[in-house]
Image (tube, rainbow, N blue to C red):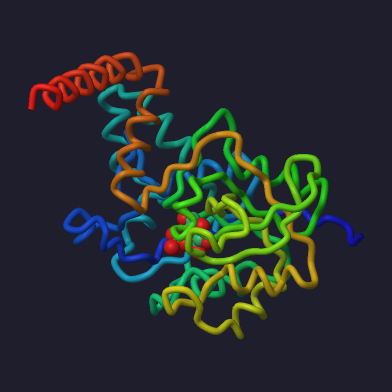
Length: 301
Ligand code: G1P
């Protein structure tokens, strides 16, 4: 087995249009929608940092300037907060600021699919393994999902994907993997298919938007024909790569919320708010009251 090379860089694709959240996303990137009190994209960056990633490559597009500004310094704001004695807010803003030179931005000019977005990062990644985090998917648990992928990668090398189980009738929403032999922190992947119909999926383990990939994926993406949804699909190139390289899956022990859908976005807000020590108790009381009132309204109707 080749020596296992450290994963230093991560790609976060943020070029999508966010049509499902119009009109909220008319003038604002969908990745800047707020879950509790931070933008969706911040969760992916924090998860990558927690897993030891040193450099983030954002693949952006038109009208995404707010993401760049969010991860930049804000000297006027900091001095105004400092003058008013808001030290907690100053510390929080300072802690979230990536160190100079540790974030890069490149653009995906046309919306040709996830595979194409990842391919756009090839020069900035170079010839080394990299992590990929889809920011729409917010992983919530005692530990970030990427840290678990790194555990499995440090044991097995090759390529690693994050997975979770979905109801069998929902496989058409995701990439699905086949389940092979167990290994520490996960299992061998025996196949991959993008958005299979119910009954045609190899299992109910779906790709939850967390990956560690070897750089050979880029040559395959360059030649990848369009697949599901007439888009260049990452899953199709991963399937090709799996003919020559190892692929393992790490089942996430927490829960992933699909913030690309309205339901997932609202669930993420409620779940993350409930888990917050500062507001969790109040939110629990509000949600309980709302559910009880709603239930009695339904019963009375
Ligand atoms: C993409 C991937 C899919 C994965 C999903 C997770 O699909 O192609 O394999 O399961 O992200 O969110 P998309 O959501 O872009 O349609």
